[in-house]
Length: 243
Image (tube, rainbow, N blue to C red; front, top):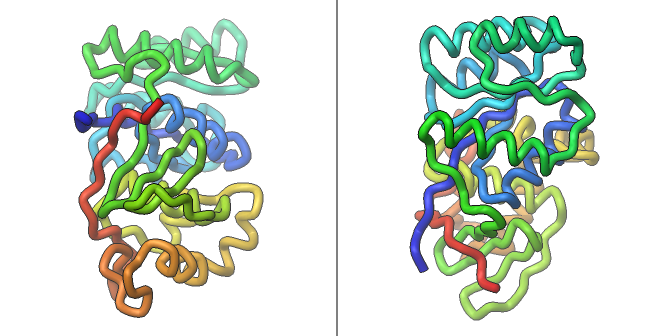
């Protein structure tokens, strides 16, 4: 199997109820997705990581999406697609004039959004996942299929994981060898049960360790970085899914 590098998308939206399932959908389409709940958080991520495209809400608390888009157009030349409830023609014109590459009005069909993402990436000369490409993560003998949400060990045996454990593992696999603090993990994995996850980040990590570590009391993959958070200390490959 040939290793593939995921096209990296930064999804910026303060509505977690929209952001989290959309991120899941985009991952299943072969994209690497990092989430941000505000323009300030997005600025920090952009300063630390490389992205191929930004999906950007306009109406957010604090700095709005238009201001962030203007900043990106001036400093990073990153393709930007607005995803917003503001659908008036004047709003679209303003967004495009300040540097936006496309404009999608909520609510939208995620399949249309993916088509627009691919189109913008092609125009920008950036890598585009193949149509219909399904990908899996391989690490230390383990394999995670995001589409099926199925985790298998080196023998091919399926290991059951909860929704929270799945999102936590996805966060680590999308950011291998990077220190993720609790606040960052919460933003990346929060879903419908976020209020429960918020009180149990360490417990969820302990449960995940018991499933994938040889010795969960002496973890080698999901390491604790004292004063910093947690890090997946493993080589991760993104590979085409098996038929």
